[in-house]
Length: 423
Image 1 (cartoon, one colour):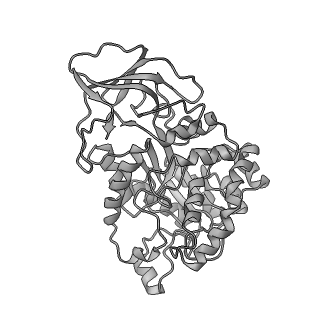
Image 2 (image 1 turned 90 degrees about the vertical axis):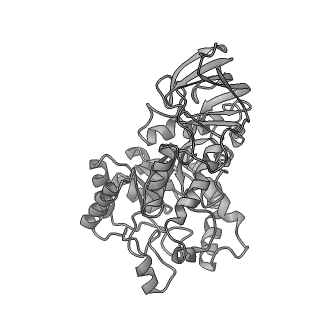
Image 3 (image 1 turned 180 degrees about the vertical axis):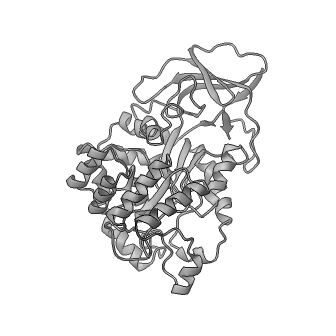
């Protein structure tokens, strides 16, 4: 029997991860199987080839040749899911770096952030937009164990209108043209073609910018950018290919139009009102509020980081960001966890829980939003989001009970992703 004590560093940062041990046996003080359960007493979790084989009461004997992880005093919880991150970027207002940094640099930055994100307890993330190849390369690197990090559901390059949020802007026209990755569309036919191209290139999900944004260099247009026909074409085409669509959307009419078009999730949702909330309820559209994004950008105001155009937009949304999710909750909109990490420093993702609670979510609701609810959004509810035999061994350990105080998830002591320990 091999014994691995909590806190023992088996990996040096930046080295390749070892192959999954055939069997790992975890002794936990408590096991919280999901957000609706109560923590158990002492229990033993057996993991083989990256999947949970059994969870039994008490600390059971460890078979010869297995690796043992002893988590005395710790509560073991399902690995967390963040539905909106940008692993390949770090916060900053220096949009001009688009013109001087190669796409390959995003993989280097992403490798750093993948490890930090996993150590923060997030074992699955949805990469909400990256360069043409770097997010997809990271996905492969973490899946094969070359890069320590979470499971990555990757969107690739976001789809936008010409001149809209997500399109290259802020430079001279000829520079914009050189930097353009080609992921804009005009008209239903071209938009369908771009969705098919994204699928061909390996995207797991389609990301569109359905309205203007806060951090882009245009000072206008937080309402709908795509036409109704364009958005319906995007949604219908994606669904025909077995893909879901996530839509960056701030303005109420843009939120409403995207929901009625069949878009699956609304990212941000800042100016949601009763009419747009009604459309979301009727279509089952899920809100991913990214409250940490608003906190992150307001922390950086007045420091010469953002251009005057962007500073003005941040100031305009700062107040409404403190209450819009609470309104959506009251109106019965389904809500799942996402942060927009990359707008703020990666690794702070779990601070989102406290912000959700401040706007009216219970501790259990907040935990569910980042486990079972988020897993359902991904169509992976039978694989991740809870601890049960047959599920992926995505497991974290914390002090305390997150169903009583969800902010204990801000300090994670031990992480396993797909049966691999992240250290």
